[in-house]
Structure formats: structure tokens, C-alpha cells
Image (cartoon, rainbow, N blue to C red; front, side, top):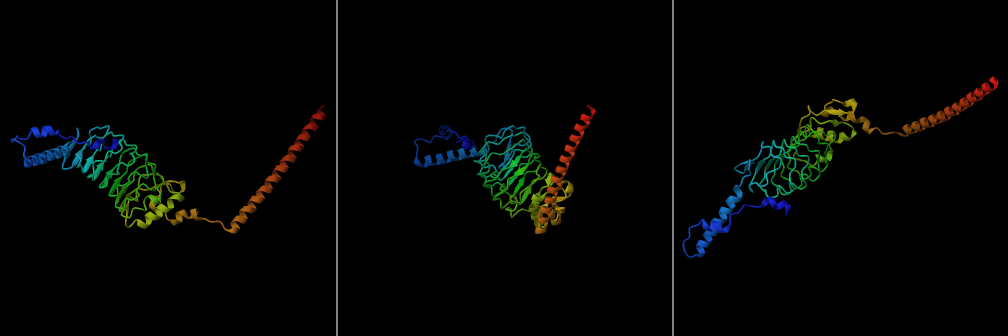
Length: 311
């Protein structure tokens, strides 16, 4: 029931509606039907025209931006298509907040203080196409974050400096997604599985992250190189932060040769050589310990003999 509290409509009382109508005399069936239809029209109009305080509403666009809001407005017009909550101080969105707004196409939550979103927030937002979560404090993108929001075309997660992890199934099912912005976060690694299920991806922004270009990044980079003609990427801004040998190198400049060490395999001769070296080191260690023991014993005897001569 908690998730449905936003679906309440402020309906006028039936008595008030009848009081506003002229009284023609004894009620007739036809007049009763007309009156009921009028009452229904009034109720629908009132339910769809309510606008939250500090917001402006026009043509299914609700603008609550730059109002220093600490929480989301509790009641919106049911037919809202474009909702802007940008440039506020919102730190949390309650579960089920979007349950009633089936017509929502655009949701702008940029430049707030969001650290996470409740599971299933977009469960009923099946028509949502544009989502902006940039300039927040998100730390991870879980597997169920965009569940059922299969209509998403654009997702902006840029400028979330604490964003360290994107679940491999974070964007699962978003076959219509064309634009994905993950730039200027704290990502050091991104799983190939997170992207390879996005057949419609056209633009991918990943620059400004502290990428660690180790062996685990090779599958992703290989996939990106194969799609670079079809997918526009900010290749000039994406750089490796580590390891030291590739620090500062552009991410897309790494080739298969750069990961050659990741595919080194040992032959039988290599194993025999390693075994031989280990054996030699072991013998040398035993001999060294033996010589140290003899030396220590001799020193002890010499020291004892010197003490007896002095006496």
C-alpha cells in the first residue's frame, strides 16, 4: 500500500458536484445520466491538473528544478511525461515513486545528492526513454536498477565521482539503448557483459575514469575496437591510470600486443628449467646452511680456547 500512496486523486465530493448543478425539478433518468457524466469530467480534470508547490506544470511537463528541494514532490499530475527535478538537494527517492506515472518519458535527476535508487523504481515506467542521473553521488549500478525500463534510449550516469562498480547485468534487457554516458566517475574496470547485450548502442562515453588497463580489461577493449566504427566513443579522454607501464596511455591505443604477456604459456622445457633452477637453489641453500653451521662451530671452539689460555 505504501507504493500506491502517490496514486491518490483529490476528488470533489459527490454532494458538492450536485450542488453546483441547477435543479430542474424531479430527477429524470436522462438528466441523472448527464449529471453523472459532468461530475466524472470534473473529477478527472481536477485529478489531472494538480501541480506540486514550487513546481510549474504545462502540457504534461512538470518542472521542479532549482528549488532547493530536499525531497521529491509527493503528488504529480497523473499524465506527466517530462519531469525535471534537477539542481536540487534530493538525497533519496522513495520506493514506488513512479508507480502512478505510466506516461513518463523523461526524468531529469541531475545535480542532486543521490547515493542510490530504490530497487524496482522503474518497474512501471515502461515508456521512460531519457534518464539523467549525472552529477550525483551514486556508488554502484546494481543488476536490478533499470529492470523493466526496456524503453530507455538515453542514460546519463556521468560525473558520479564515487561510482566504482557497474554490475555485469546492470543494463540487461535495454535493447533500445542508444546513448550511455559513464564518464568522469571512479570506474577502474567495466565488465564486457555489461555492454555486449546492448545491440543498439551508438554513443558510449567512458573518459575521465581511473581505468586500470590490466589483463582483465582486454575483452572489453577488444570489443570496443570492433565496434568503434558503429559506436562513437570519447577515445581521446579515456586514459589508463595503471599499471605503471601504460599509465597515461589512451585506452583505445592499446592493441593485442599490449596484452601479449597475458597469454604467455609455459612449455615442457620451461617447466623443466624451472624445476632445475629450484633444485639448484635448494642444494645451494643446504650447502650454505652447512657452511654457516661449520663456521659458527669453529668460531665457538676458537673463542672457548682463547678463554682457557687467558686463565
